[in-house]
Length: 192
Image 1 (cartoon, rainbow, N blue to C red):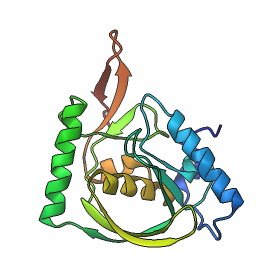
Image 2 (cartoon, rainbow, N blue to C red):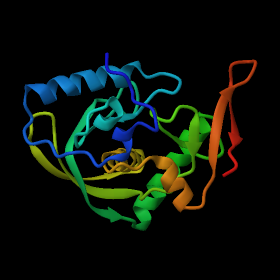
Image 3 (cartoon, rainbow, N blue to C red):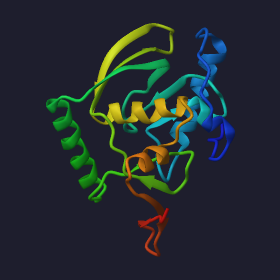
Image 4 (tube, helix red, strand yellow):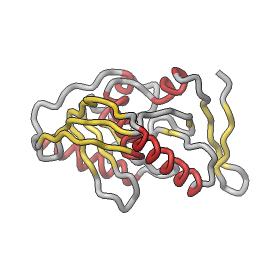
């Protein structure tokens, strides 16, 4: 099984290369990435970019929940961000629902390549994306809500950007997580 690369590995800070053809090697990589994403626990992952498994390629996969279908994005390009009121409201409602479900007041973003590091990142509520799927078919679609957040996080990976950079740019806070004696996750603010 592919191992998830941890920061500060150089592949995580480099711009990933475009995929020239969706061939057997790419399909094998996608299968291996799905296996690695499914195996991720504590925390579970919702997305995984090829650089996170040591491959500098413009690919990421997304599974919003364990029961959601796997979505594949090859050579993704964000065409534009859509910050209208309706999209912002959808994002706000989703954030509140997820925070309540996880019993957290704030929705923290994390990363499988930065174990136990979390932060508040303000993301655009909607975006228009061009990409190819696992068969090489090209699409242009609008994504919003939690899926738009995941796409922005994973697209950052393809550009060599880890989420703490966004946290610091936005002058937000970073947190370290650990388990208490009851096995519950606790968050402590990091001083920077």
